Length: 102
Image (cartoon, one colour):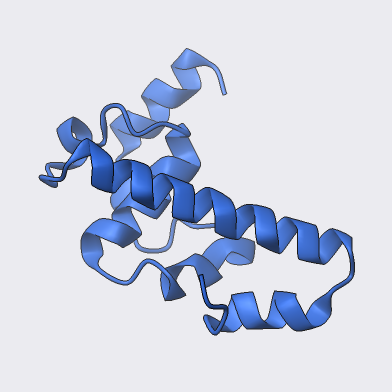
């Protein structure tokens, strides 16, 4: 995304909407359950950064917690994408249902 696209995404406030995750990523809500965690998932998938999360959303949280959430999200996405590429439908199903143990 270009800087202008990111600015438009920010101004639209899209990351505040519960339904802004793409359908293929809705399973993330099973791993990010609180309001702040869900908003983090939406925010990070749009901006690919944690730098301004607190300023943009108003959620008070530490950089350590944000890094932990970022690592969790990236790990889950990598596992999911790898399982789909390997046609490991059992793992894909576990991840999508929220049963995969991190």
